[in-house]
Amino acid sequence: MRYNINSQILLLSAILVILPFTFANDFYFEIAILSMLNALICIGLNLLMGYAGQVSLGHGAFAGLGAYIAVIFSSRYGLNPLLSIFIAIIIMGLLAFVISKPILKLKGHYLAMATLGIGIIISIVLEVEEDFTGGTDGMSVDSFVVFGYEFSDSISWYILCSFLLVFTIWMFENLIKSPFGRLLRSIHDSEKAADSVGIDVSYYKSIVFVISVVIATVAGSLYAFFSGFISPQEASFSHSIELVVMVVLGGLGRVYGAIFGAVVLTVLPQLLTSFDDYETLIFGSIIIAVMIFMPKGIASLFDGFFKKKEQNSASSN
Amino acid sequence: MIELFGYLLSGVTVGFIYTLVGLGFTVIYNSSGIINFSQGEFVMAGGMSTVFLLHAGLPLGISFVLSIMITSMIGIVLYKLISFSKDSSPISLIILTLGFAIFLRGLAQVIFDKQLHTMPSFVGEGAFEIFDTTLSYQALLIMIVASAIVVALYVFFKKTKTGQAMVAASNNVDAAKLMGINIQKILILNFAISAVIASIGGILLTPMTSTNYEVGIMLGLKGFCAAIIGGLGNPFGAVAGGLVLGILESLVAGYISSEYKDAVAFIVLLLILFFMPGGIFGNLKSQRV
Image (cartoon, each protein chain N blue to C red):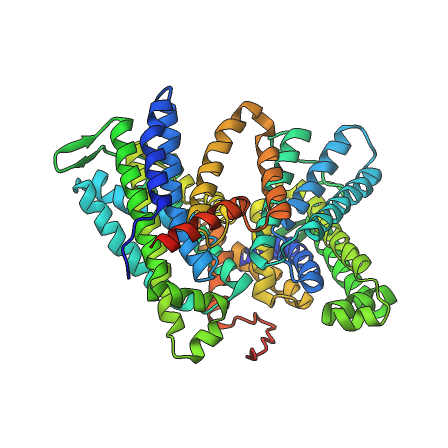
């Protein structure tokens, strides 16, 4: 396994460095940070959907529940934010591992419905258990203080999220090039074939599920700390759907597709707010159009370009 | 005891609505293998357009017929969109129908509005008294019409030539083609029928619970739960699943917690998926490699 840094990561890093200089005000930072956090969740979801071939219509709920756990430990019980996120990761990781066993036995529509069901149950619980979660009104979140440094301005959040995003992509690219990644693709192509050559299919599917839920927990928690507020809306069915649409719209099984999809679908609603009542209508039309005309995702448009690049980098290695 | 009877009655009433939504799912799923996530929006479209046609001053009967026609057109549009799609993998079709659902909600916001609407019951506001509990005329109407639709569908698929052609097409597309069945037409008809069933459900429900542009989300999901609880693809399963779901919801709301009422459908769904994935009427075939 080579820990190479390819040209795409450098390009992304360069964009992330240059981008803030074009931002006119704090609102741009806000959208950029939100895009990056959504992109993080999508990278994990893409690993599950695009590489292991398992659909999840509940990742918004997992991100939301993870965030609530972190927030409850830090803002209600006064724990250090970093420690709270760590506890949330442990709890959500265990939860994901436990539910992955029965869930990932299911296939296709059944799997989609089971994850959807769990997601909706989570969001109902978050709404009803007001004593812990503040109910539908949500609850405010204490500031994010790490080792005495308080993340108070947008720029520090932007830098934190940028580092996290680049680091996650780097990990992800090395992961899918590793034997583990090849194994996932074999499961994606044919679970039965993978099973018959002795791969413990259900174990690896569980691992991927846990990884994706943990990433969602981290991104969801950071979003709660960044915005200083959390409501059950984070865990809603529509948020879960948005995440899946981001991944599919960007292009399933493409590292940068998921990121691209996340950015487009985070920025788009902001642009559409000027259309007021027509916002939802236009949003739906765009999803339909993309699924009809480019079902492989928007990233497939750049196929020719990136393939050439990949070949170049492959020959230079 | 009287309490229980009341809960059962209201559960059965709602259950029949879930049945209609579940049947709509089943009709499309059986013919095309597609899970239509905009089924709930068909229900919304039926109810909302009836409300607004009535507002526009049209008589009751014409409003019903028009809104059923409008909804069936929506169903056909969805079929056309699906047939344009270049990719038929389940996930991209799921996203397509989800996108269509969002589109319909957006359209309803623009054409109608975001308010809650209701309409007077079309059989009068009265109620029967049965064992000290009441059963409104509208609730009785829901039960009768829904049962009639179930019977009509059964007769249609079993006895008529078109219906049999539709069953044949869902069993084996290639064989059906060879027998000279026009698959395209069959699929369009399926989507239209599914939308008609859903819109009737929407119209029946509106006087009892009122409607708005978002009402379809939960209805659609619960109808789908009903279909899976009964056994996906089995029309009788959808009926049984819908009734079981309606009754359980009503009992949980009455005896345990009204706040967790909406969770019932999904908890039952998970239990069914984990322990009897074929549903109550399951005939899950073992998969061949």
